[in-house]
Length: 390
Image (tube, rainbow, N blue to C red; front, side, top):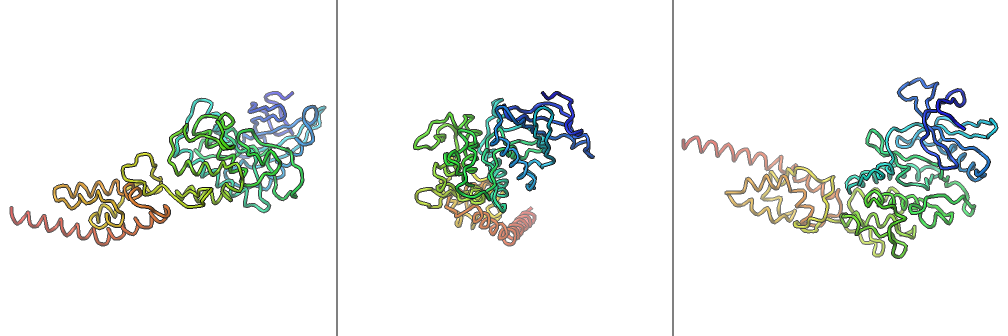
């Protein structure tokens, strides 16, 4: 039985237990040979072979160590060491970098509820990690993405931990693998031993839904094997459709890759499974208060402020016609500068956020080159006229 302050391998001094699932023990330890005192804390995972621990458990443990050796990503804890202790009990140990922070499961446990904006940020960070894993040669599947394996670091970044269920895609097809994953987060094909990259996407989608609703996916109602979550949280239709595509029961109906899922998330586009028709949430109407405006386009619109008389036509913001009214024209120009991006996004359809940003960038340049000089000349003329009258 391990004790606090016990030293393993004449190097790792046990500090406190982080977890114990009956098969594995996870400890926070101090690396006594670390050259940097600030980075001396490590995580030591231990597996005691024998008893309830079977060969499959040991194979998974060794596979995790072997794959972690070859991973080099800033959001995945670094591999440090692997050892075996034969002291009456055959202990195997895996040493990794310690990431200070809280798991998303811990945040959920204390009542934390995540907004759509926060969940989009989390999704983007995890997808970037999955792109790295899936596009390795050979590709790597995590197979156990869930809130307890996602760490919100003290640097406000998301880290993916616990590669105990990891699978190297170099394994030959047809070989029987140990069934791993967590019920509610793992898709059906994974329990059949046929995990694919889209399996990690399903687990990501189920985890994001848990963050939004506060309800574990295993406790959500299902219809045609699809998780029913839309009525339990207020989401923009486009993001709800994006989540729904992640958790499609059939893997071929999900996004084809983590890269595609990230591109669609960033662009604001969603591909409907049935028609494959691309839609987005632009052109929903200026009075629509349910659609969320993409974070990437929010901010001051210089084109609308400097050239309000021309800008309104191509952006179809007919409210801007008030800028032609002399008494309130200047007030309307300020309002269009402040709200122009939102109004333009809602007033007409855009193919993507990139198209929208390019369009508004062109108007901003025109405003600087044309609108600003004209405005300056008008102000100078008005001041000169006023001076001559007085």
